[in-house]
Length: 197
Image (cartoon, rainbow, N blue to C red; front, top):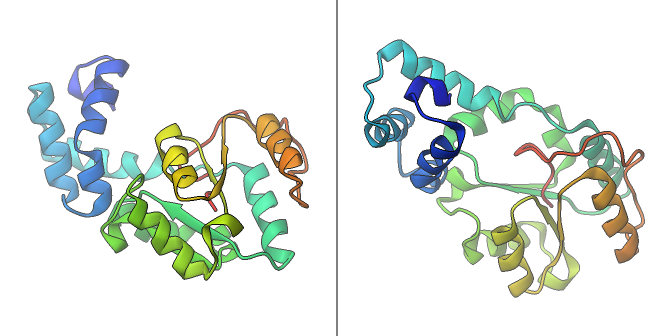
């Protein structure tokens, strides 16, 4: 993606983040979001480049972590309530609902563009808690971004800051969580498709 804008990865990440919250909240259409990014990068995009960006922006998030999905399946099968709380733009939500069978392992879905809120706004956590019908101290929130973790903690939710499967398993053990990932070494990276519950 960075190559389309003729910038390096670090600058691209900054430009990407600049309006991402508005996009994930549903305030910006895809064409508007990418056009603003192109304007900030001082490049003109051809229509076919925009279409490619729309596709890539879905595909890059479409690679779930198998160990996390299996842990989710087991957790859901045990009878515990599960939820996904994700910053996700409308096109990605449609793709996920159509293609991610593992979404069926969640009792409740909170997607930012549908509720017009984004993490780390406390209101989106409260929406998810209401959907699960649990109090904050009864919940465990897993996320790979520290600002999101900090707000959950401030609301009284137990948290795990996901950095690797081995670390995640260790943190679950420390909490006394009854279901652990089968193999803590399957993956060392969190994806947006990782489970947040």
